[in-house]
Image (cartoon, rainbow, N blue to C red; front, side, top):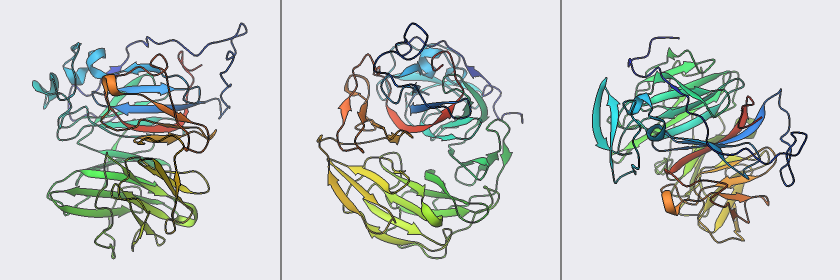
Length: 395
């Protein structure tokens, strides 16, 4: 492993999980109402929700219950000065963070090392990125419950494709084949006066696929594309003015689709697509003017949610809307291979306002989980789905 840029960034998140496993029958099999998870080379399917103050919480029973609820303040993580910090709340409390090898007080979750920037699933590891405004951490796990810091983040976003993880920030990029050892990538020289990467994703195209990054801030927006796993970055030759103006935490996403299609959908409801590997882009309206969810490719269509509506498209160009049977706003979202959707209604809902939704009818009808099934806590910004090693909490 390459030496981390910060001497405090090589810690492990090892606090024990305090939540119960899904109910088991007498033979150790899942009890009534809990489906056995499908096998995937010995791994188990999991959702991972990623939040502020380094929070992670996972579900391995298709979104019914959530376990391994960790956060840096509760665990006394090294990036929060190795101290348990009881009762802190984002925006309302002062937290102690390590910044530049010094322990400094900052307003909790305000351009701080704990801001979540994404989770990427690879075949043998899962990488999460934290840090916005101040360097945070790239952290790696094999089971979703125990995370180890492998690199200082420098406000990276992270994605996986073509056999490697790529972490992209403004100018700084890194890549890794295993999520543990990181190598310098190419210079991502966005024309955004140092603004961070707001959205990052991968799509299949050609031999090396395409990593697509959008940086925005101060009224500026720029897009860079890498065809060699983050070693070099190129600006597209054609980008319409309305493309990707509202990407970021609050809604929208960068996705890959069929036949090399690349898609950017922003929070304003504009779809921006490319069929030539990200060199030229075109725009199409989704029919919504505000999208609060992240998106997904289901295998047949792209889906995004606005308030009380879902929009879908098979090609990124033509979109149709479906009213939700459950009137609600849909924020961070993910879908399992079983076709189950989970979502948090609003990215900034936290503590007493927070709840997790679940849908088994293509994201049209949503049911809230009981607090016992999903404990309330720090805000959830991202949710991902993939496969992980079995663990004590997800056997």
